[in-house]
Image (cartoon, rainbow, N blue to C red; front, side, top):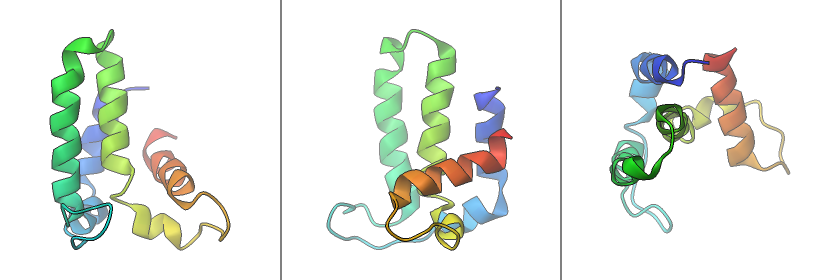
Length: 99
């Protein structure tokens, strides 16, 4: 799997571009918009990059950064109540790009 290419596909997706503008400051997410949250996570990833053993690990983590919240609103419509909603949302979102 080419995670670098998958990241390119995610960030080019019109749904992604729309959804990163969603959000307001709240408990647990003081940064507000999803876009600001992603920027924080990418900054953290860049600071850790030299600790990663493989370039592939960097791209896997970057992929997860970009799918974990950005398309959640789409997957929430089909995620059953009582499940781990965020984990299920990430799985379903990842499936859009990896399979």
